[in-house]
Length: 231
Image (cartoon, rainbow, N blue to C red; front, side, top):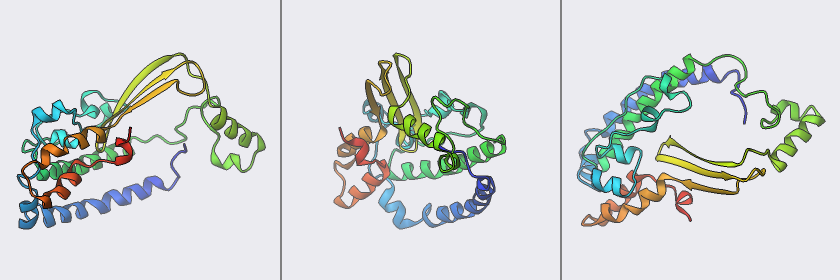
């Protein structure tokens, strides 16, 4: 964990100015490209009812008409402070999933611009050495800081007994962590609910009746990570 570097805000501003023309270029290359439309329209269609049955979330759900985004509907980490739209389409095919993600890139840019404008000066971490490691520059300059860093990462800290479930909106959909604490330095039990597990399960339905050549489009548009699917 570390704070941003002093030059990061200016670098981010430069990128935010550089990127919109690039995004417009990507739209011009793909949105009305006949080959692209032929390979994505009416391919891998997922309807809202099936998406809900399989617990599909994120862009894949919003591409078939499910208007739900945790950042707007159950805001966390300050998302309630930002103005942004939630792109929703109804076709549920590969093209709709592409189009939702492209629209979300623009909304992400809006969020980042607002967060950057509201960024306060100074360090962002709380000043609690029991749970926060020392800055990296201190570790190389102070033996006490090195010991503090080592002990914090090996022995950990002791949260109270209890359990919590927290979910956030990740690029692939909702990812949630259910953690149970017995008061020790490590979780007694932990379960991760990732979006990829649900996205993979629905693939056979998307592929049914389609062409073998469409399999790649189906897989890519559902956007999953196999490491997250493993059980």
